[in-house]
Length: 467
Image 1 (cartoon, one colour):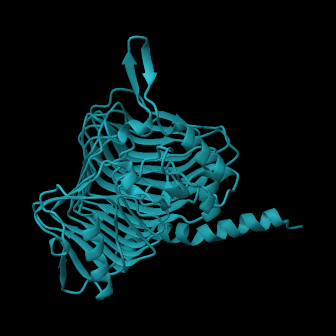
Image 2 (cartoon, rainbow, N blue to C red; image 1 turned 60 degrees about the vertical axis):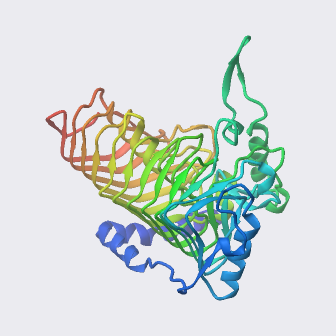
Image 3 (cartoon, rainbow, N blue to C red; image 1 turned 120 degrees about the vertical axis):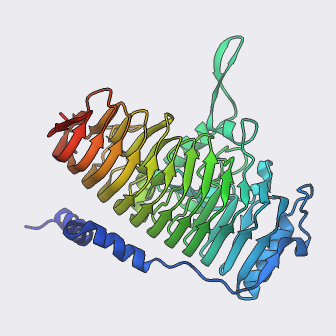
């Protein structure tokens, strides 16, 4: 007799099967199909310079109202460019509208105010994979189509040890020893996580003032046709480029250099059809991290990140270069990365998967090729199901069908650190045509089924196993 549980399992399996089957036939042909679908938004050929609406190019007066007026005028006219000319412009949160391209000319710096009150009232947003009402992201758009953030200018969040970053909860020394900086995000973070588990409606998850949950830097939310290109990002309060529930996204040619806590570079979350190319990363956390919601909230929305292509990027400092997780409860599949260079003594991992038994989620069909790894601090390929809560949870993390080919690495502690659970092994990891030099210690391989090595060399010697 087929039970309701059996039907649910079969439904879930069938939903995942088409992606798995097509990827198995020719995975990089699937990448070509993704790229053929992705198209940049187009904007009418007209400009709305912010200085024409009273913005102060000396960065003394607050230009927030002038920028908002320029965006409203551009939107009302049917779209175009809101032009930020060369100069130093001080602003609070910038809220984009459909058909608006915020364009920073060369020599322009958009500098964000350090007063948290400027980012109120609260808006609907997502924080570490959970929906809530919180401080506005610095550049924000919701339910928009055809939006852009482009140009050669600089977007400066002005975060520092004095502003925003200490909300993470850092330790400092006084005459009595080490104490945690206060106030910080920890109590509010725990309250938010519990609200999500208790299924409290999002409208009632109100944070903002007194919560110390740092806003994200750039966050398009439920948007379609997004272009973020060319700009420099500096001193972010938290995650830097964080599209959520978006479709058809191009992120190209960014110079991302910010080393604060949780300063991930690009975090596509529950997004489909994404191209990330020609970007530079030097970050205080993962360079790129693919996410899809955290724990109960990720399962409630149940929207995967899928069909993501990453190419021709350079990763310097960071925790992981090409990362999937850990907010991955809504699943991820069809992720492709090629022709990237990852190289820094302060980059921990080149390829990194993070998950645990509290997150759960299925991650499948992840393909990496033609990567050059100068050096990384830890392992070239890491799969960590023991991340944070580890096995303390009721949900099964799944990772299957990972192919790493034509990777050349010059220095690392290990080739790989692959750690599944006894009841949730890692499935089908292939290393093909790879060269790993300067490897200091043996690989760690625990609870992996279907590990295959084809033409792999470690420290000048061909190997058939990592165990």
